Image 1 (cartoon, rainbow, N blue to C red):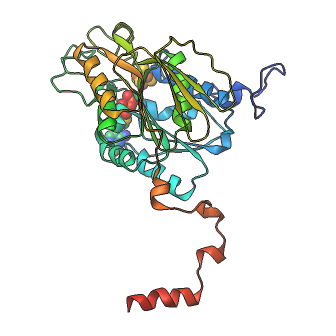
Image 2: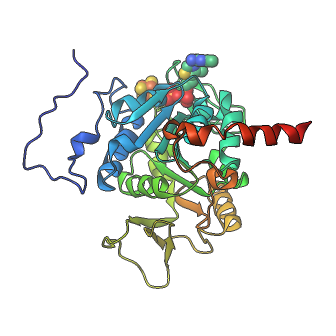
Image 3: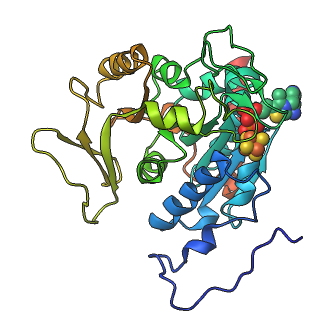
Length: 350
Ligand SMILES: Cc1ncc(C[n+]2csc(CCOP(=O)(O)OP(=O)(O)O)c2C)c(N)n1
Ligand code: SF4
């Protein structure tokens, strides 16, 4: 069987502003289990990139190891890509990002890849406000290695083999808020209406944009008693807002109830429009986001939607004052300051 899709497109298919049809954002045919939540997230990434008219060569997709980390093969075949080592996606992204700030960086990881082996890497990418979108495809288990509980599995959740998880879960959204992440959201692979605009907004955010996406593993963690199954998530989902991302100069198509709508302007002139469903919550106030998250938890609900955004976000590059020109394009005259300047620098150390 060939995993490569045919290149032919019907000439009447709708093209976006840069002349591509949606199929131009696809990858090869997925080898994941039929019904895996990860495939729906790949579909949402394809849709989001098509809608924002992203030029595929301007995106770099990076991942670690796991079923989730395989997904970059299934979207954006014409983008740059690096499938790294288990848990090491953040440091690879940091290196690439520091060398070239002109690309958009999309990191894909799993709850195992991020919340266990990659935890040390994850927290430092957050605190540095690395300019990237970081998606965790969160199924509460290690899908690729046959379904062991991960660190995001909820206390008391029942595994497919019938055992009860005796450990408290790590809530990656709570952790990202604690670490001062500048964009934090949670969504569900089965809610494309919410997920697509969230991905678009995350990719426009100048800094670390974290998306924890609940993504059921149909093969190892979709049983009765699992808190990451389709049935459980659908029954316990609670949303902060109706959400719409409006790129600069485009029409708004969310209906707002008066008194509940909020608008957050991003640096590039695009806007996030929110129709709040949750009282006492302000998406630009970290403390209210933390409280809102705790309120949902106390009722056993899964809070989705944009939780927090810092509209004044300053990414890692602006803190380090790095080169505007990608390192591989710097000419020798710039890279080598010349003998006289080197002499001066060296004499300062004598
Ligand atoms: C250094 C190292 N340790 C352990 C493994 C084995 N391993 C492969 S994937 C994986 C976890 C995958 O879980 P997750 O990141 O949640 O992804 P999923 O498959 O559930 O999408 C583990 C432990 C590995 N590949 N490399
Ligand atoms: S094992 Fe689970 S996570 Fe992996 S592809 Fe299958 S359903 Fe998806």
